[in-house]
Length: 385
Ligand code: HEC
Ligand SMILES: [Cu+2]
Image (tube, rainbow, N blue to C red; front, side, top):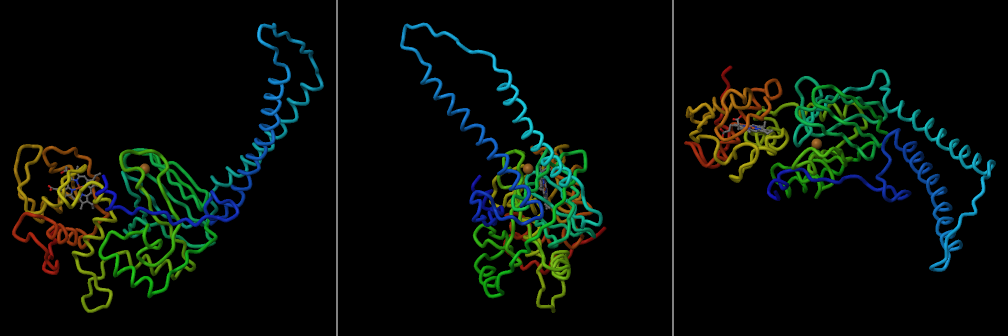
């Protein structure tokens, strides 16, 4: 369990608001009203609870009789009093309902022209879809503009909760759900120097959000986590929300994560193995496939590439490039014996270059096969349609 958690982002980036120390910073247009309403209702409840409980104890004491003496009732009916304590509180209730309903309707009415981001929830990670095949586990949005999340789940019920935005909504399998919010606090960026040092110390993926308190691109972030108990690793189903100050900044980020920079002569060149490692950590593989031989939902990648595989249909295959590629695109076709066919297909979600990069990475972590042991990953170029 611990080993698994080490592979996952484990984060708590929200700053706490000094006014309400148990609430995180208010970072969306919903937050102030939401908190105000919450405290009004809480104080109304306190206002009623304290005198009622006070009277209860006082009367217990005042009207108690010594042991052995028979208690007797001397209550009389008092119509004005009964009317007063029925009608007065109902005004409070109606007022709470009206304000609450108005605020709820606002939460459910997406403004026209909202920026749309797709969200896919699966055990136990989030995949945000920015269109044109750009999928990333982090949610990146624009400040002072409404964002709509179009949400679906591929397995069980999850729930998106962004405390700093005071926004929360269930994601239910078999249907699309949506939520919207407008962030009004942009994420700060740490200095290049701080980022460079953190990158050096962190080493390769996974990025340690909890330790650095900023993303691997140097942005401070808000927390997003699952708030519907969805199985064993529910508590680590978290990700970071980054609010960009300008569209140029957001687009630059999207461009940078959209695909591997394969131009060997450019300064941002990324080797296939490194990209493969990144995808392994970011696209949910790590949740089901370990690197150290532990059996999770799926077989460990330590004994994947190059291994002889017994399949559920009784045949045996060698886990070569082609087999791995097919396992990723059509996981239900060749199911490994002893496992459930629960792996989602990544067809349309991973490009040929992505898959080649994953294969390059799997070679470096596998104990089997001709290429077992660390490689540079440069020699791998396998793509046949
Ligand atoms: C929900 C859990 C789950 C996720 C997420 C998942 N897999 Fe799998 N995977 C499985 C299971 C279970 C099997 C074994 C059954 C089968 O062959 O379908 C498997 C099998 C495989 C195999 C064949 C392994 C072998 O040794 O024979 C490969 C390769 C593979 N997965 C790659 C990936 C990659 C790459 C990703 C991420 C992009 C990924 N998987 C994400 C559950 C998952
Ligand atoms: Cu969940």
